[in-house]
Image 1: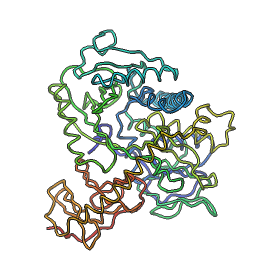
Image 2: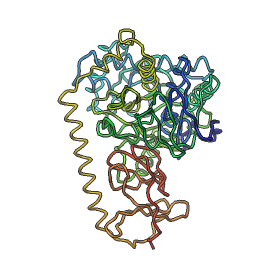
Image 3: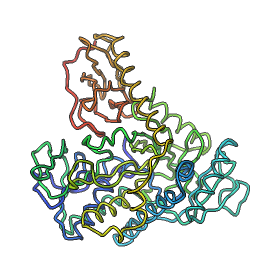
Image 4: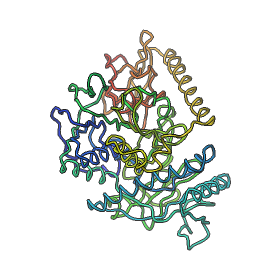
Length: 510
């Protein structure tokens, strides 16, 4: 599965030699890491960026390319349990992040278009959510307006998909996120930064001097930034304060016209819709439809979700044909506010950011701005108000309840995975192409899969905290239902809090 943005694109040039130390080592070459590295380089620091797969290989190169301050029902969800000041801070963070990103795009010639964003209800049950989102947005200072599908002047009249109510925000941005990553990497290198690919971080140490432990040895620094989606170390237990979400996109060619706006439903099943034009993406597709979101490793069939998106689009856009499908992984905090700042028990030497909840296009540069302010010693009173608000946010009972429910789910999955594995013993029939099965050998869960004609066996136990892995039949990966680590069929670690590969076992299925 390859995103529309990366489909057929040339690899982004980076270095593959052994990295040297620097004032700051940034782990992760997504938007957070690249913007942070560029800003620190401009502040006079020497900077080295490390990434296992390369710039934009994960969520930064696989999102929908919607840069919007109106984000489905996020604002009303925060406001339901938190004061208006926190919602305003959240909006301000997104606004500052979006402003930085568009200014960078203007300076580097990365084209984008301005669109109206819509949070819409597909049925009557979602209408109240639209009303709550409009109220929360207006309270936070956004100039939103309510629209009805019959009002042609709003631009939503005659939509081919169902909509009963909507709130809209004009002048939002549609952009090619991989083009942004490419431009950021090139600009960073031009200004003296160093970017390495093919190097995986396996840990960090603070004493006697900060260093990143990698697959090619230790890389020394005065300061370390973990921009890895979720922190690859367990200090602060951020893996237990967020949960991993995976969602899917399909790009289509569509005969005739497609809606001009950017649409996100507030009720289920989730639908994220945007057109693609030469000004904001490649000309190989005209429409992107997203949805099918689910906690990582907890879906009976991811492929069924992709197929459902294709069927829905063909039903509402006759003649639509898929060009490519892909997915991306995001981490959401239990109160929808991202974690940005200094990692606990790091003596102030390690910064991190996580929990963007699918809105990294604006929150990643915002996180970079805060990390750089802290790293360069910007005085507290000179920092943006949202930074101070995030730093002093309160945990309310609803946050604790959501966190408790998630961690209860983790405990259930931990137990049920082992129980299910014990019910099936090796040998088992060879899985069909694109399929995987978990069975036990000597009480140890084994993952057996067939991909591209090759059948492999790996130890199907996540090296992070011992969860039994589940097969993802859309992407042909082994996914952990506990804290969202993912692995290739040959056991190679792809993402998540785990840092080690799976053990490869002798093939035993037949």
